[in-house]
Image (cartoon, rainbow, N blue to C red; front, side, top):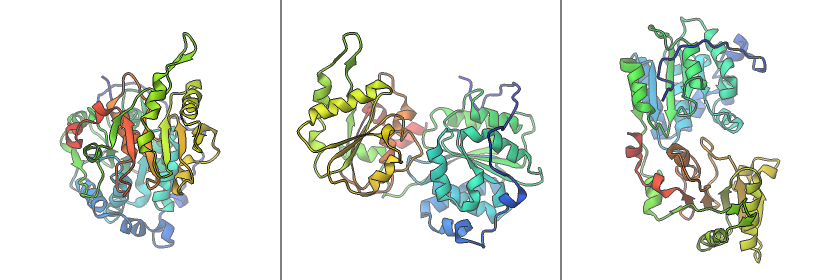
Length: 388
């Protein structure tokens, strides 16, 4: 398979007709002492020990001559805080904060807003997603080669094939040339590297290094969820047969299997198929729980970010039906969650399953009730084995 770390020469023209961010010198200059919102030290102080260490380890690799770091950490383990730590330590040496960029090949406004919220305000215009790739490239090329640059890439396992975002980024910055640019440094963050770790090592050779995050005992992992019997096999909740326009009655039995997990009022997130099948799943739930006061919400119909609802305990059991939200990167409030149910598909992809709802309930929280329905055969592995 052709991917980011395979040399593949073609010509790309970079344009930026829709980009509105103003990369003027005044906009990029960081004054970390002027306001707390722009004080990198303030944000660094709020990170946890493992984040401080992970970011510092990545920075030390760059200071010791490496040009690329492959930074691997479990889902919801604190990668954004580690990026802040990396930026903080780099700014204490020969990297200016205005030359540090954060990018994701994921096309997600949610990711942009959440990441900007966690960084100092003066990083705002340098935190970009896939739709702003041309802007990132132009901003980097505008910086004199006498200045060191760091490009932090989040969810780096996405869009790494030929002609996708990361391949274009590497190509237009000259990374496929025999003499790679000496002033540009990459730190790739991912929780699900799939097959890319070996390709990364082969491509960068002695100029690259793989760094793993160590997590404390308080981290709730995929393995711990399995050991606590909180992971179950997802089943079909739709059951629509378009040939005879009917619903398979087995789906009603599948939905009733949730009853033992419905106790104190909580939010339950159900991922549905796209299109009209979304509405069929909702109706199936209404049919099963027709004699209750349960609330059923179709996320696409909401005008606000549905994750804001999760901040407050519901008065009644509330089922929120989503389509493509919560795929990766997004952090949600865990306290009032009850059931997370991923969509059953015939050919699930390992990294999609692990980054989806199963990945959203890993991390640091004290909800010991929430359960997840997913593709258990793909979750039946520990983190270390997945990285290999």
